[in-house]
Image 1: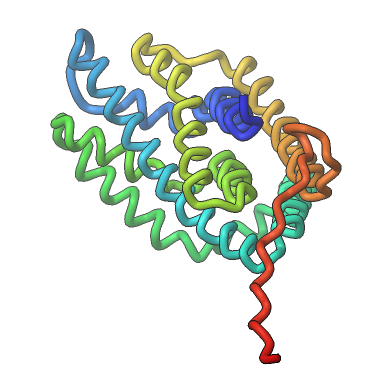
Image 2: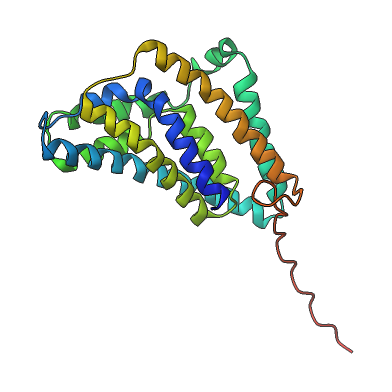
Length: 236
């Protein structure tokens, strides 16, 4: 199986335990029937909406990555993304808190929250899909890490597939939580949240290894180089 498939599903599934704490309140508060088939359909539609947003993010990340690859910087892109992820994980939280206190995206976040508030007033299936769609745009470090992995594929289509698989990986845990109307204990969530940085470091090391083109199958294959432009025919 392709390492990208395993990576995307792994990030999604393991990260979904983190999602319980971050997005769990939204998922548990979704409007609609409290039990039965309607509940199941509504939660599936909501998670489908999230996955569509992740696919859109993958398209953007993959397009940027593809442009970098065409410029001949694929190895630099992969190593650079790995280094950035390591910095994000290793830099103390208090420093990041100073940076994130003044986010340019605050205006967008407030708009998303306002949209969510309006959609929660009606339990129509369309609204549940739109709630998932908007929820996918809320700031989330886990999504950013996944987007970095998608960009490193260097291909817009593969990046979309990467983010779709990431979204699908989050669904089992999130769906089970909303259907059971329960959440994990604070201690368990705390333990699982501590695993997120470990996963991020592993992803960073994988990206760096891939960028080094060591010739190791699946882990660090030799990256394809962009085709050189053909020389113009010379006059004899």
